Image 1 (cartoon, rainbow, N blue to C red):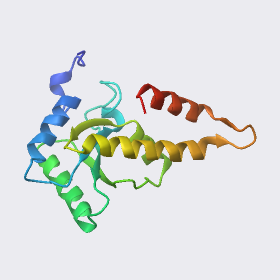
Image 2: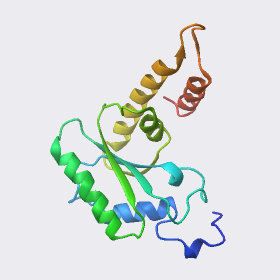
Image 3: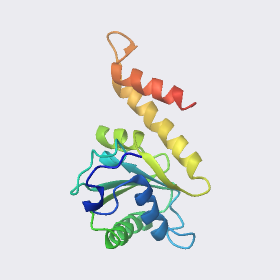
Length: 165
């Protein structure tokens, strides 16, 4: 792995493995039991070195379809606990099973997120919801006049096919 030259001067966490380490310290089999999947989005999900010391760690937390207010409280408490273990700020959003993020940016963040935690059933949760987001994106990017996919949906289709879905 090619770490930045000034790696040791940056706040913890700096890499995906360090983010996984922090999450595994907080999300245990006895705490946050309803969390099925956690993904990292933003600069930490992209190329190492794109983030800087002020970068916020963006997390998407996957829950079952039911759960109501518990999920919102758990998301807030998770953020607080993660920030106690790190000088970085965390932006944590929750996503219910088969719920579609409303903004295009949120859908793309979920689409490009990197898995850092999953429980039993988390992989299926991720595949099901990624497929749902793909279907919504395909609907929004279809060009009516040409009846051909836009470059954005062509890229998503290619990525989805490469993943074997």
